[in-house]
Length: 604
View 1 (cartoon, rainbow, N blue to C red):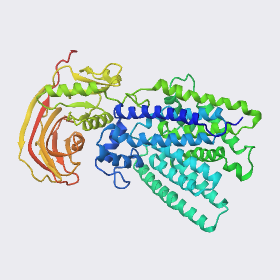
View 2 (tube, helix red, strand yellow; view 1 turned 120 degrees about the vertical axis):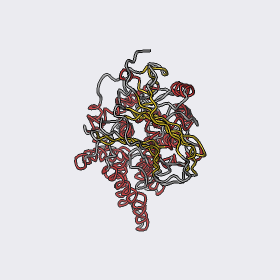
View 3 (tube, rainbow, N blue to C red; view 1 turned 60 degrees about the horizontal axis):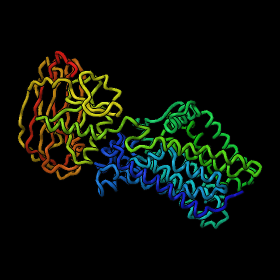
């Protein structure tokens, strides 16, 4: 028998569950350390204040809506983790509200509650509501747009029409992977307008709204995506198709303990559900196409076909893991609405919705406040930061710390958020022995026999390692540079005619007192090396990664510089004031050391 409208007890139960999940998400937003993607996005876009396409750095990490909202939070609350993640956390409230509204559309409790619980506790998705990324925002606004699309088809009301346009627009600007769904929704809305029995004026206004809130921003986003593709920035995805690439990449992180590959079965189930949606015997004609199950199917089918078309014609990769979470949402909705629409003689099949309870069970097993399931190797523990600070406090000179590209961003953002001036990390190759400390993934410690672990447990993702023996430093240069009240676009700090032929590695230290009224100061410290028998090499360090503002503050850093080749080796070091911002340097000292080869490095 149909359950009828939701009761007060159901509303209370759903509210309790929503508050529980929201509390968990909020705690994760506060306590889970920054991941590399979050930190990289902050330094690329939020700190300089440029995130608009054609004006900012070209990278698909710029989830436009997420970046724009963080740009509001950052000046108000600073670069703390909870501040940058606040829009995603609040987006869960929108997601929960529209989950409830979808649940109310279902007539039978046997499918309503499996849907409500599964949506609130969807594995992997729940974590993105506590991260500074656009995926949680995208799914929340997708659910909003989809609900209003379903209601617009059923009622023809303008409020749902505008709600659908707004929801899909914001969803696609939060996550580019939702563009095909957005385009499909616009086509469906246009078809609805054609079938409306309304005045010509109403239809004209509806088409104008589709153009203004749909076609124009969709064209803009399409042009932006094309420019990203030209620059090789749309790099994330799989070329193996939906069944072999996309579905396994979503299912494995969500359900890592499955002993079999359910991707083919899920694909077959999806195809079967789409076929059933269009063959629903309970409705007929146009009414059938306006049923919720048919509307959902009419979005899912173009999504699947569109992925193969884009891959075949433009080599666009198929979405994977977090970029394909919308497929999970659509499949769950299609599944429960198909069951809800079954005729009375098949009513027993509705109880198969209980299979969705695997979602909360899996989420409960994955609950944590210290890492992200999709990136378990990213978090840097507080123990590591404290150990690095202790080493620096005991050292009379700035320490050099080697690491990987992504860890250096999260390291810098954590220090900035905590107002701590630890040495910035340097990206070094495997086997490097020229830094005082190494920040390594635990699995990579075997590649650094010259170092031993000093912080981080063997079970931690990242550990801090110190050199077994002190660096063999031989001072070859020490100079104090006269103050410069107006640093030009390029200011040379050290440019020897030629380094010692026997010196293969340098450690260069810089101590400089910097003043600038421009926050952030986007200047770089640049090192360039060359030799007649080796190619030119370039490396730099963004001063803005050390601190947000420079008001007579001291920059202290050490940089390991390998010297390639053997003939006429040259190195120069300069400050590149890339945007010609007002910048003054007072006291400035440069020291350069030659690193001698270790005769013997023993274990501690």
